[in-house]
Image (tube, rainbow, N blue to C red; front, side, top):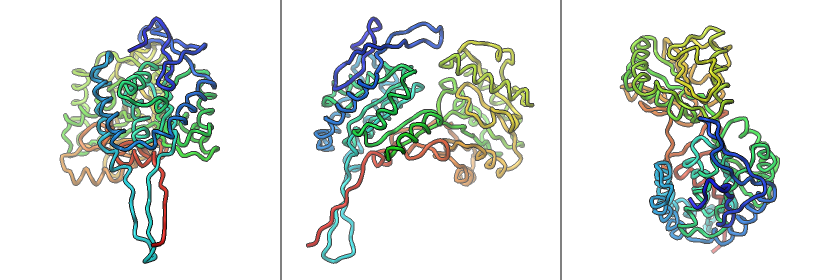
Length: 460
């Protein structure tokens, strides 16, 4: 990157790095040492980003799909040649290529047949203007890219707010797209000190230049952002928390199910909104499944994993400790580890978690999962739906018709058959129901989110 750890990571406004008086430390979760410092946006910098995007919008919205596609495809090439071309950046570049391939069809106009014989109509698709995208820390390259890519490709300019936990991961997008030829102001990137989050976010949501907001993060914060947007009559796209279920049916391949369930539960230390948190197993195969999963954990997931913060690790241990006090048992893990006070955690798998335990309904967001043994398919579906969330889910069965029947009954934005709950790609709509959010990223649906329609009629 053009920045180094010797100087604060800058903001990115108008295709230029911007320094600020205020800065904050980015701290390692492993040893709590300061990794680097970052510039911190206040109200003035947030306003400058919105104004920069608004100025750029007038010309960017007039570019053709071919012109925008060329920039997106060039960005993929710069990503492969870039100094920071790590695996996550390259995977995100593939996401950009998929977005680019859909631009032309996504913005096509239509001419519906109307009532009058001499009447004609044209329905145009037009960008909102400026989109405010808020990205989380836990998967910053792909989720940061997702927060702006569909909006930018649809002809909007963007203010992207990266997480204070990973500002470098947000800044790289500005640098890459500048190299690809993106005009100044089309993509502006800010981050801020934790204590400034409320003020900066509320200011941008309310700013008259902002036409729509998309947010990926917790349900608690997302609800606050949506409320503020509602006060200003602005639409939002929300991808929020989850408590994802995986149902292992009696006709499942148990080794395949065990591997997928615990990849879904423990990948990235369980710090993914789509992580598997509840595994619902039919009693007739429960013993074989537990044995299979123990083998999987010992082989692939028995080592320590790091939760991002001490506070996050404390929350997870607290949830499990409360569940054990109320009658749950550990199927895997060392109960003594619950007394640790570090970010390092080994997998903790509980069984018999009662409804009065906080863990039953609360997203843990860590390397843990709970197993529930059920007697019927109906009981499994009922338990899967016994949550305020509904982002993703899985069903395991060797009978596709059986799996499809169950999948259709689960209240979630997606159900994945014989694969883990973690699945998000540019070709498919992605989002939740209930407290997991509303509207969709991905596919043609992702473009529709960032386009409005304008109807024109005339008489011949």
